[in-house]
Image (cartoon, rainbow, N blue to C red; front, side):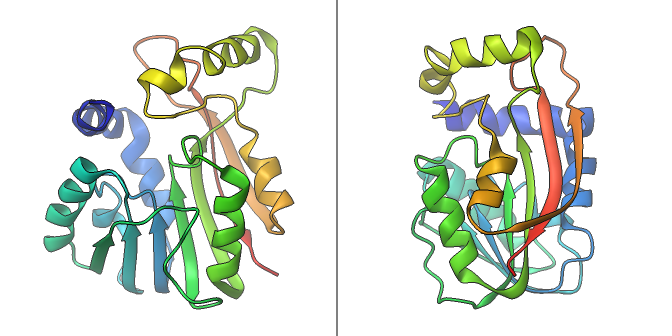
Length: 203
């Protein structure tokens, strides 16, 4: 049910700024790309011409079908497969870039997923990430802890609002580069408002 709701929410989110952030996330990419948790394929239209191919992983059947439909119309060659971030079906060191877009909040094992991303990247390859993350403090951080321990993951497809994703990226061995922290505008106050967009490199 959440997959269907999320897919219908995506155009509204894009109008509120998510599309511009997706474009920033993918700008300048070249070579072979793995996108984990591709959802309904909202990123496909934003891949630049320098990208040779995209292997898009999506385990949820409804979203995977939607992504496959969008892949057919993408200017970049995109192949959509049934796979998770914790088991990426790619050889060691074979990807130029891994893209994680609004997915690290909901993977079952974030540390394992990030180790897999590290494994499949060539040395010098990039992890591009656009994620909602833990607030830096104050009442919102308290709210995040409460909703993550109660209803939010149950009603939002396993999403956790308060993960310290930047710390997890560093712990996986990546060197984090420039990042941009911001709150995504919303009609209603949301514990998922704090976001970070940036890149990290496999040394």
